[in-house]
Amino acid sequence: MSSLPVLVLNSGSSSIKFSVYEAGIGAPQKLFEGAVDGIGTDLGKFWIKDDGKKLVDETPALPTRAVAFKMVADALNSGRFPRPQAIGHRIGCGGPNVQDNQRITPQLIDEIESHAALAPLHTPIAVYIMREALKLFPDIPNFAVLDTYFHRTIPEVASTMPIPQEYAAMGVRRYGYHGISYESIVYQLQPEVPEKLIVAHLGNGASISAIRNGRCINTSMGLTPTGGLISGSRTGDIDPGVVLFILKKIAETTPDALQAADKLETLLNKKSGLLGVSGLSNDMRALREAIQSGNPRARLAVDKFTWTIARWIGSFVAELNGLDMLVFTGGIGENDIDSRAEICAGLSALGIMVDPRRNNVRGLATISAPESRVSVRVVPPAEDLMIVNHVLRLSERDSVEDEPAMILSDLH
Image 1: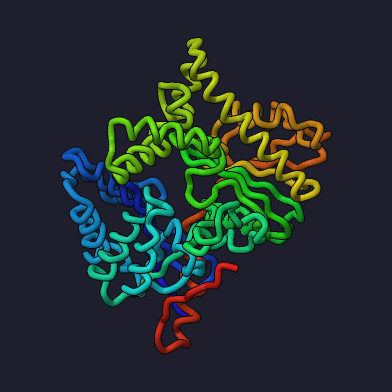
Image 2: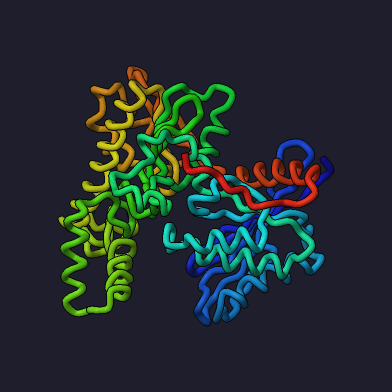
């Protein structure tokens, strides 16, 4: 395959992050990266940098996502930078019928949009960006790379929810998220991927996965990213009775059912988790500072976070019937020394022991104690690289196919 500049798009509620890789010949190499931040404000930021050097550094008004994405498209079409020849989009969840990474068509976008409720904070934005990319780069193939793709190997006993079959038939099941991050960890551990591996992706959104021989067998997030671990502003797993109680309270002042459900969704996804328990912040750095000042609610929130993760590690060790390696990744996993130490503090009976000196590090490292039976490592994710690898594979496949088609996958 000849050289193929690949654009990777990762859109959020108020930002669009992107990078361009030179791929197709040898290992993919990042050419540059950038972002448009502050969408919906008059104080936006638009930057592009290469190896730390700013090539673009502007502060435009960004009233809409359309304005923001057109700035990215105009820059990449201007001739100042290598023009992409393929585009990879990070997609949270494609729904029950779209489980494979594939080329984007208008029909595929419609299908993904029809299941936006599965990832309500991410899918509507991703759908918009996919449609805009087809308009602004009409001659370039676009590909959807799913966060759920890595979790498609989860067995039925773990993916099935204990609910009536009529709802399961609608696609209600465990999908899992952060899959591109997990896949990138397995990729980086090659050629010696441990048989029994647990990876904890800890950031403002947090999850944990059990991986056997490089294949996911279970993960903490469920139908939506709300489930599993407590995270920055999400509840994680919670007694369904609590949700019903809160919903009934909301309904007392919001009789419209859809409006009440929207308020509940906002509460569970944006006002809970570390933010809800602490009443202060969803940012681990702010909570650590508050702990130093003696704030008991901040201490409780962080303890709840680390305690919950330790419990999940224990359950996944049981599911794997042992453990060879534990990997921390994500913003907190990579950078919060105290969180790693607190999570592992009570796990020595499982063979997990962290060396305080080795743990005093941020970024790639082995932090387990010499006497630890389990290797404990810190490995930054390489999500953009994984998206590029998938785009290359899909581009090669499409080069021998006449017409790309939406792949409909059986749930089981």
